[in-house]
Length: 457
Image: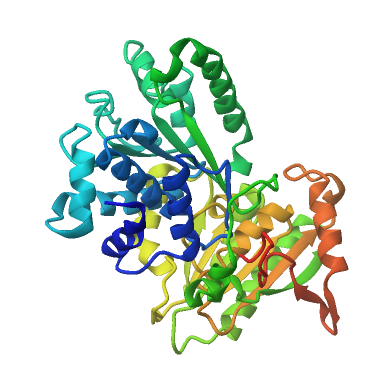
């Protein structure tokens, strides 16, 4: 096995070759035994494939007899339960294919991972609220493991306060996650306190490293995965990615959005409801079941909008409400029932009834949903980029519709986004094109991307 086998490994797992950036990242990590501090990728570029890279790197070093150069535990951390579950699906698929591999590169990878210890080539665990506790983590520290976790679950364990972990087991969980572990922190800009906590742990470990010497344990590592980085030192897309037909279609899809203003929050709800009904009549339904998202900044606004749409639609569309305050049982039931209808895919999905999702910020991060139309309340620039990442996610829809609505009342000091909201709105208006029915234009960094920029959602 060698580093150049990554593409064959990826093809065997997923039935398609990796994007150029995925192959480049694997080559860099295998060459340097070190991950970039920040991986800057737009929504829809396949960030979850970092799991594939980390697993392959560990297997390669195990094959060479140098497992200490790679992390034995790989933790994908994200502050949204929806995304944790989607990443868990990918990890479990990798696990199953490695366990059943009989020939080829997958068998080599599985054999290398088994040489590290444990009962299977790869163990996959999910740590989040609202589900049974995982107890197998501490049974065999040698077992190669992928963990999908929310920020609270992994953070509490690192601080010796693991949720649902007994006082006797808390030090073991803290020790396991603080050493020989790679943290892949998705949407890192939303988890700044957690990032600072891990950096503090790394500093203290560094102080002790001088006493351990060369034979000391592998320290905790962290990689920030984000489409909105705060540093210029980062790994990102290259020229080859913009020439890749599949990825370029996603990056170059134009997403023009109307910019509208309303005086108060009641008018905001009315305007968003009008836009949804307008979108229903405008979007073609001959080839595919239309999917529309209406995203707002407050749970109360989402509930009001949902109630108004329910009254006005009278059963003409499938209506879903997704908020962070939804009870896990109800939210999971809704997602399990409709995930196949909302999940991004290139093939059209014919259907009789349109689907309308009313949501808060819970839909912003990582969820692999795809919509034909997006009508959103004004927010910060970073939040808008994430929301527009769910619009025409794969770049396959010929016709899309979008609008951003600003509530003027309280916009100068918004309780959610502060003064950032009005500053973002002023930026959008300054770059918009005036039209007869209002202000319209392509939101910079949310529409088409160009090489060397961080935009292109």
